[in-house]
Image 1 (cartoon, helix red, strand yellow):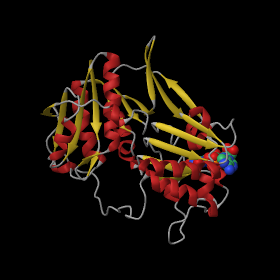
Image 2 (cartoon, helix red, strand yellow):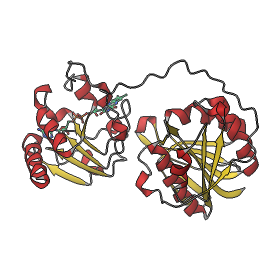
Image 3 (tube, helix red, strand yellow):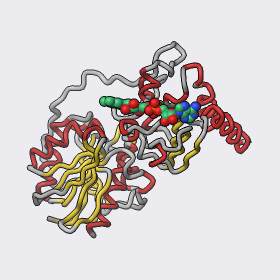
Image 4 (cartoon, protein in one colour):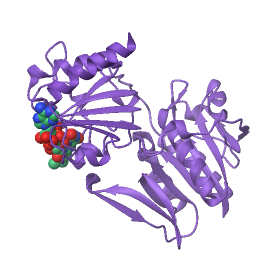
Length: 334
Ligand SMILES: Cc1cc2nc3c(=O)[nH]c(=O)nc-3n(C[C@H](O)[C@H](O)[C@H](O)COP(=O)(O)OP(=O)(O)OC[C@H]3O[C@@H](n4cnc5c(N)ncnc54)[C@H](O)[C@@H]3O)c2cc1C
């Protein structure tokens, strides 16, 4: 078993997925921990500029598989390309971003390789008997520390926000075809249609700044001050589940903006700044936002659990604090 770490990179429409950079950051940390090297793996067809994007990180090698069978993501061709390469090169760890795409095929890959699988990793440490992985279980209510007892390659996926993308070190990787990939890869899935999320719908996973509204706001008629704060900050609006369930956040057509819910049954976000206003900090909310780089909590209850993970806490009535904050930000921005 070599002390190699591989990171399988995800991309769409010619751009690396944000979480690919997080996976690189995780892979680099892991390689540092085990004293090994980290390499990227890029699969697709007509990779073009993606190779330049992916090789601009501190990777020993960027392995590529450029094959028409990989034009659209399909699990069969992905598993067929990766299985012999992993079997023969035997990297110690293969890191995936924990995305819908990865979870679609990486259990199948694990089965093909008879490899250990550790999904949704949020951290790791060196234990007496090897690496210990941290991962949330039971919808984030508990955090498990697990150790892999088998030998051989370990496949793991890293949860959004656990290893911030700006931790990925830049560099210049050598680019090589992934060895041992069989010829004649075939797609085992026909994509009939890709339904694009409408332009008017939000994708909070890409937001740098989020102002999140909780039940403490007190009603649909009271969210305007938070919209103003979001506007001056150039932020997106997010919400806890009760705000969505109560229909307090509506679009211009009066539809409930469900895609703004953050948490275990909503989106998982990792902005640079997350302002939680009137949010208590229930575990189902925290699992969706605790990867934010800086968390500012506003709550009138000084014992609210949100303060346990907040970097900055403001105790008080959000209806007084938010307008004052908006004014202060606007003044700074001139
Ligand atoms: C299966 C399941 C899935 C779930 N999924 C999600 C999910 O995806 N996302 C999610 O958010 N929740 C989810 N929940 C619900 C979750 O358990 C909590 O009930 C919810 O997160 C609480 O939302 P909240 O913090 O806005 O409201 P509350 O817990 O009611 O907290 C309101 C807070 O506002 C403060 N407050 C009140 N007035 C003011 C004021 N004027 N100024 C400042 N602070 C004030 C209060 O002190 C309090 O801390 C889920 C629950 C279950 C069972």
